[in-house]
Length: 203
Length: 203
Image (cartoon, rainbow over all chains, first blue to last red; front, side):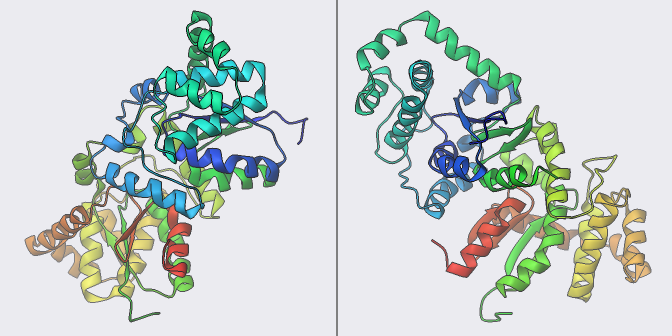
């Protein structure tokens, strides 16, 4: 890792299929570019409101394309994908759990994020509720009792809300969304461009 | 060219920066995949209405990203790009001129399309009006008097309108939009995936 360079921001929502695909690809990306990646779950709901956009899946015609493309993109990258029965879902509990874990152990937070994404997008579990998040956290070896208490704590809610504010301030409008030295890249299909940007220093 | 396989549909609007970039890349794409490409200009305005979407550039936050990304994507592909002063514009005259030319000479229609795109996206010309389209057509060696007469003809208007209806029927919702053996690929950044799809027979 190039410690002299600031980390790359990886914004996503736990209810985003393309965020999930990116989460499965980002470790390889990180290794190839030799720069650390900061995982930053956020909430697409309030962000889409700022852009006046409905959730992708609700847009006529385009939503049907997206539904087909989620699975096609996953297959393209050899990633297991089963479109969730309930979709999209609220992911505030998942996001709060991530930041609480992150403040204790970065590596464990990343493992939790991957486990949450896989539970939702390949194992058929709805991760929208606190009990569902706790179950995934337990499976990932996280102190579920500590997490359960924290999820009731206004301080954690505030902590997580600030992260969403931070995404808004960074002008994030979709998931996944990468920022490399101030340069934004939106979408799984731009990860290759981001990689090239880092390798070449931009163009 | 593989004449046994049906052509690949390439839908675009002459006011679409990504359509322009695709138009500069599509000949190489066509040669690599060994399949003919049918150029199909359409009008994004009525199509966006069906999806309830505003023009990309008008979407808060995302529009700013797009504006930055137009030029960045063009530079990435080493394509000249100057963002037009007046943008977006109505392209019904350009589209009609394309289909009139196409019905006489496919190759000339493709040359006209490229000339129209370059006039608008790299040479600083507004191609929204009939006189502007005629000037570009003249420069491309097309019978401008014949075209001028045809542009007044309700038959050509109807002919072009049917093409937009056809794009709607094909569930096109953006530009560029490719359809390969029924499989849709939206965006310049999916041309590589479309190419891989053809090469591998899909996945």
